[in-house]
Amino acid sequence: MKGPTAPMASAAMTSASMVSAPPVPAPGLTDLARAPFDRAAGYALLADLAGPGAAATLGGLDALAPGFPDWIVTSLFGGSYQRPGLALRDRQIANLAALTALGGVEPQLADHVRYSRRMGMTESEIVEVIVHLAPYVGVPKALAGLRVATAAFTEPGAPSDTADTADTTDTADTAGNTGTAADTEAGA
Image 1 (cartoon, rainbow, N blue to C red):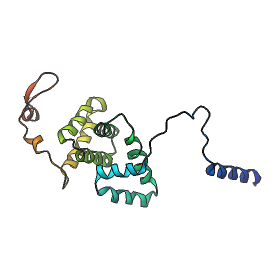
Image 2 (tube, rainbow, N blue to C red):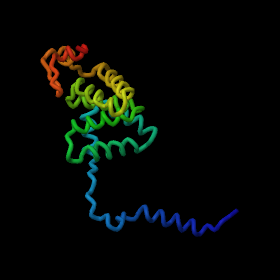
Image 3 (cartoon, one colour):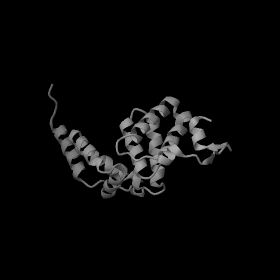
Image 4 (cartoon, one colour):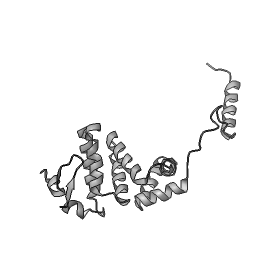
């Protein structure tokens, strides 16, 4: 069955003209604060966090989904990461927690473990973030997160925490238990 074509052409023209016209904010939305989107800052931050390997990953993804990697870098690293209120370390802790809680995102969790190490977090700190999640997200997800972290820690070229494995300094936890880090790791 053939229907009228004029209204469809008119709708297409309206749609096309809406795309080229400057956006008009909805009533009452003109006073919203502008979101920070700094593409150059996003790429610079990603280079700092990920190092030279990011270009190869992004290039492969761009071949599959053109423009998507640029959107990721611009909106996340050039947007969310550029907001005031949290230090980069705090954002990484939130990322480690969120990705561990999600599960099924092992490549992204491994990336953020690497980013956290590159920005100075120790293996022990990263492990503690993940262990702390167990009562909230479940032991299986925490264990899965620890497997991902362990693999990232042992990759060729990964920084190591020699002090983490040989620490025998006295420690006291918030419950007042004392001992050495080595005792704690040994389960004493």
